[in-house]
Image 1 (cartoon, rainbow, N blue to C red):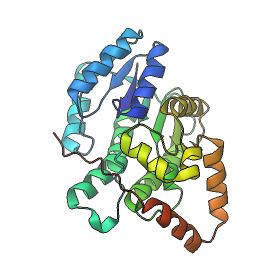
Image 2 (cartoon, rainbow, N blue to C red; image 1 turned 135 degrees about the vertical axis):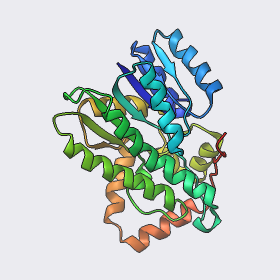
Image 3 (cartoon, rainbow, N blue to C red; image 1 turned 90 degrees about the vertical axis):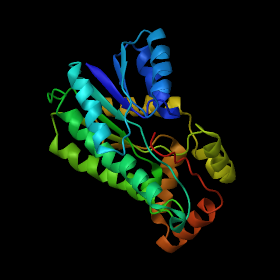
Image 4 (cartoon, rainbow, N blue to C red; image 1 turned 180 degrees about the horizontal axis):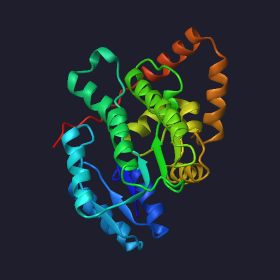
Length: 264
């Protein structure tokens, strides 16, 4: 029985891979780059894990179908899904083109829902299976200049909350809502421009992965890693919406993140 990890070669994905590999768990990894997957698989095997991998463009229904066809051909069964993959483009919405809009929406929401469905068809629904998806604290409130990202992450959280009720007693379902993680230079710059708020909110991928795995083991509906992030969400809920929007727009309008890469 494998743990299936999407977005495995990214910063948070690698943290999940290393943590689970160090425990000797069998892993099935996916990402868009076969070369990076191969290198990561070798690293995980050196830690004692049984590792399989197959590339997948999560924005493509055909690629998702090909991924699971390959898994089925090898007789793979899964005990845990860790859906890490996400597209975090940050800019004024009118600067989006159609390719960025479609890619971000499909990877963040459509791909996650599709993988959840496929996972549930390939796991024993006896209460032991774990379904863990990475949302974001950005999905807790509407966010100018991060509007599409925050909307897709909110949609994912709501989907999982409903699914969790449907699967009560048959599978554990958790959504983890991290803040900023310094996994790429553009994200590090984003954290820096947010000043004290950014520094307090940021948390290492290793810590987020450990907290997330503990949360799904306990079958928590959602978890926000970090005391500061939980405090900010509580306080922001008390602020009038227009005030909250002005503050968010002032902070998030300072920089852009555009990590979009066309499908290979």
